[in-house]
Image 1 (tube, rainbow, N blue to C red):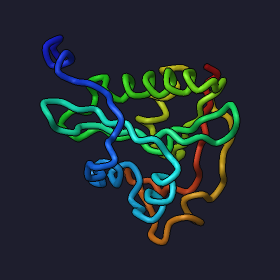
Image 2: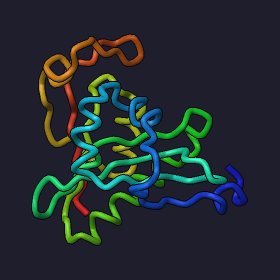
Image 3: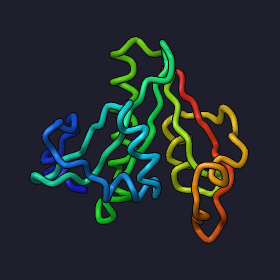
Length: 158
């Protein structure tokens, strides 16, 4: 992306009066039921470009000094341009401002791209929740042709 395009983007809270960008949220998590559950407990931040929402992440408190990124997504035409990384750093900064000392994020063990990105910005594998996707989703999920079964939870000390 050119500097001009970056200058036209901003991350801001999703206003209560705005429609929820379910298209993006459901790209990252296909269960509207689960999205609605953690959306209700989370702060939603969107990336806006030329008055259009092109990215979103949800930041949820999970303990007195810990927050979790519950969902993070970038619109297809804007992927692989550094926007996801920018959102991760923004989430870390917001968690720090709330006196948190760690931030978590989970993804399927088959999600190679997100696993690479999260580790690239300093997240480390914390633990695995075995059979998470088998137990929480009514339909089987696949990523890169692989059946999603286990969630890898990564953590970063901030």
